Image (tube, rainbow, N blue to C red):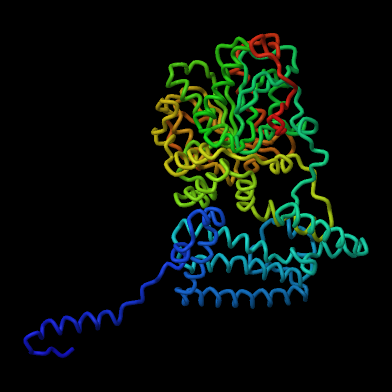
Length: 595
């Protein structure tokens, strides 16, 4: 740089330095997604993109455009891998049995033996798996922030599922075989099913045939009566099935997302039936499906009108001084909060024990669901719910389906749409498709105070004017989690053992969020079990290394555990009482949407 010696030379030199430096600065990257969203009204964004999918797509595209070298490496890597797969497929055509360069995991879409025996289809599967891996590598190359990256990973999974060769007739050997066997009639039947699903099921294949899975007949069939009803729930008391029952009744708190009968599925697979058949008086809450009239119903209402009211009624009918509380998922959260509330009111002796099934008390690491819960998504959901007063049933159902898109959506494309088969008649899927809405105020409170703020685990939650403490819960607690749970990850569930104040027995079931609970005794049942002190440092992997593995359902050790805490034996109490006479047969009207 030349320095001029005029009177203003210093100033002119400085100016030229700035210009020279600016010349070599990288251009400022514009946030395209935010810029695009800035011209769209907030209410419109809340309606069309509440989960930020559109923003994520734009962010991925922008990230790839600004990282060309990383993209080039990914593309080159994919090309090299594709060439290796082609070589391996040719080798298999000449009799080789060597494994391919891409690991193959269990996947129901590729269960037909042709995928292993035919070198062409073997190579097609390998190329597909390589493509799915490359999609995730591209997400990594986009350089997104953690929250956006998790959503992008999920979109990559969904896109990979869409691109599966099993979704098309030529790429689905099982469908081709069936078409040949049926003279093409299976293809016609599948096409009809696809058109019907496009018109009536939001374009997704039906998961289940509910024709012979009717609530109150094949499902939710345990005999009982509705003994109490308020504007939020019905309380069902099941009829005794033994000559004597334990003195201390069981009050069951189900999730308010979906309906209570996940705990009372088909006979022989019903957890509540199991408890009744083993000498317990059982009450279960059945929540009303919310509508716009319940927009201002909050979590405090669910607590007061739900488990706290149920405990009052159960004690009055049975004459018991205390109850054993059992809760599943969000129902387990409510059972825990109810116990803490009674402790705060000086009535803690009314709860004898606590059983928590696939329940989170600590939301610091909630797993894949966290991708759908950040402050901006919550704000958009609040705007969306403000228009109707509730979160639509299909909104939450679609979210959970996307978390396991292969299992819950695309696993049915081949059998239903290509092979022309009717969907299975499966009780869990029948329940899963029977979704419920959620009141706007309650759902917003839940997302903000638990997922975003984690107030219960941090000891900062207040409800109904009381400060709630998990350490105040000195009851014996039986916690069951599921090893493949994607909604309540078992390691996060395990942290509850260090939050509660009493002795805790922790059990890890096989299966996922629902199958881990619907886990009757049988050949496939398995669990790990071990006692954890309430003050123990929550270390799930150390616990697992010490725990006993048992080839049996966790229902069986729970039966022994709850029997020890059920009190003495007595003749069964009446179903209902003078104060709470039976109002009708189980499963009641709320679960059917008629009340």
